Length: 139
Image (cartoon, rainbow, N blue to C red; front, side, top):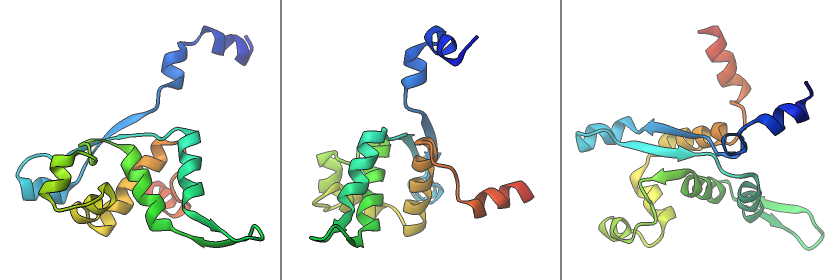
């Protein structure tokens, strides 16, 4: 049976559905004295490319002048975190955050942002860094 035949027999919804994952921010779970669980989702390829494009400053001659990694990561978190809704106006007001990006910066530590970013990337089909994969193999 060819791959085309197998694809034609497959449940198209299951294949095209974006992966989800629950992820705990342990520090916030301790502070809130309840599980602080994020619902993370993969980001579709078109949206992911848009986020990357928005983070790159291209000069007049087509050369890359700057890459705003911070902004790209924030957008990936905003798209990848499905719950809680970080765009919720009550939440923004409560933390005196003007934008959802500002709320993320207030809620999460730098390492937590990095960890969530990596989780969303993995869900989106990007593999772990080689160093991390090597550490897991060694353990």
